[in-house]
Image (cartoon, rainbow, N blue to C red; front, side, top):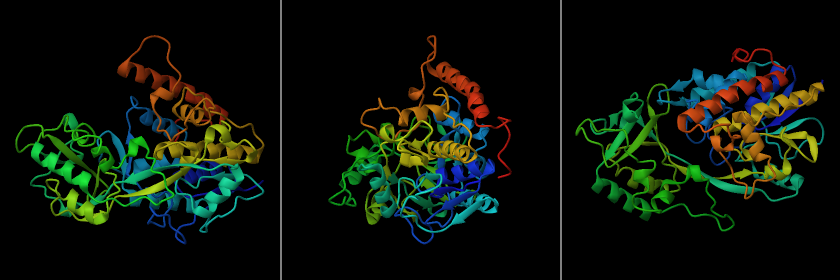
Length: 444
């Protein structure tokens, strides 16, 4: 039986390797770390989370919550380990990023039919089944090989990451712990009055940024805009966006602050906190100066500064089949964010599908396409639809799903979409050759 080659040890590559191995196929997983790191990676472990430590909402009234539930039922390694390493984050699934990556690395290393090779791949293998899951930070050599193979220039956008702060450096006399509308106390909140807020916005918009290189065009993913880019849209933009105080009251005053900066726990010990929504391209010294203007952060120590990096993705509507195969060579699959999905969970979903289908090629079985009524299927149909114009990376959302019959609205509509999706998921599961929809992964 042939061996599958998977290029890239991020979320998609790890999930693809796990799914193929579960089918009894031998897998060669290539990861260039620690011999070479991208500008955003620092850990030698697989499945490193370089932006937020949150996999977002768990609610079935949210499309990403539905997608996580589908992946859990489909035996996703990533989702299972995320549940094991989660940290408090209210309705969201957030993880201790170090424990999460270490656990993924350990599970894959223990699998007898997965061989992990630590070296950079610079050319696409000419033989055998290949899954390209090199991610949005694909190395220049491999990106050039992909460009030559597909015969077109890549699209690209910029992705920003938020700073991480030392928990012991936070002023808890000012900062209060609470979640919006009294639903738990999983977040730390830095309250600002109107004077403090407008002074902060003024300095933020004046702060020095890291310049773009001459050949780089600044195209941002709208869901991950740098905080200073948002501030430039208007003085009130942040107060109605990532700094909105809705549903929170400062226990010192009993009133709702004018604005709030939320901090989310990064690890199980509560020693590190992420500045929620504060992706930035500010120079490091400016991050210290401006962000320490926030009440409670005057003496904050930065464990990681925010930064901005280039993300690469292919034009999937013209290049990929709905099986995630390259149209010109069906032995080659693409998976993860390089396909044009955005987000950890979405990347994992594409890895799961590519891994299952790559294994089916190896065993000579028919490949599968998830129904568009499911969350995973809605993403696949979006990125491979030739009708999509001005293709840009996309998070999963209910607007990608086929409409329901009737006139349901709001939460009722979202619940009905989730119920339909989980029912239709059974069809996908049966086609995948699995027998028990709700069983746990193979002892992750």
